[in-house]
Image (cartoon, rainbow, N blue to C red; front, side):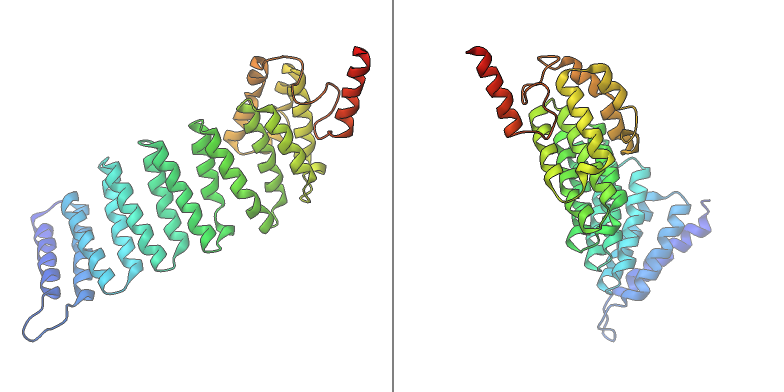
Amino acid sequence: MKSPERMAEADKLMKSGDKAVKKTLFKWTPDWDTAAANYDKAGGIYRVANEMDKACYAYEKAADAHYKNNIMGFAARALENVASIKRDQKQYEASADFYKKCSDIFVLNESYDKGSECLVKAAKIMCDIRIDLGIQLYKDALSIYEVNDRHAMMGDTWRQALAAMLKAEMWTEALELLERLLPTFVKLEQMPYHHRACLSILILKLQMNDYPAADKLFMDFCASDTGFAFSDEGKAAEGLLQAFDKGEVEEVEKMTKGQPFTFLENMMGRVAKGLHKVCMKKEGLGGGASRPAGVAPGEGGAAAEAAGDEDDDELL
């Protein structure tokens, strides 16, 4: 509630803060601690009184005082208040900029998780304005975890990033993210997540109508020592590729509605459920272009050559 008394109190606190940082004949160093406390308190009063511009100004001064007093955590929190106010005022780009400043300070203070969280807040804001900038902020947030060996803490961030990419139909970006995550899942010994990521990558390749690439990746995944070939996801991927290759639209639709597709991330599951439409539009419906008919995904070399020899015999 706005009252003349409270506003006068906030104004007085701001003046006291300014006075605390001024040098005089007998005070050679600014009192940043006292100044920051006064600015912070004034910002809170202005905010309650709905004087948001004054609140932002007070919080920015508080952040500067905390920073110069080498209390980085408090400096970042003061800027978070500004970012929150700007967001509520629908000044979205300004809000995102302040969240990025918060992140820089948190990282400088080695508070890596908080630094990444601030970038995620900025990313959510920017995705509604400039999706490309929002996605880049998600990537930067993930980089903070990776560079500082905080891989175990990045779960919520990569999920939100992936969902944003899929919602915007940024298939290439989503592929790159999943491929980036594969070594992390191995490092953390989270093989179920690794197998789901492999299946998700194959789904995206099919969504992009790139069956040959999906087939090659499937064979690569099966050849690795991650156990994908014997996992539920590996078996499902094999069945999906076979049905897709043969143009069996109903089978593709049926498979993607069951397990393990239902265990994928929500947006990825939706992409999978739409693969039958891609299959329906695929050229050469009913036959694959990358492997001879009857050769299952992952079978190549001798099997493919044998099929080719049979065709040559018939021609003779």
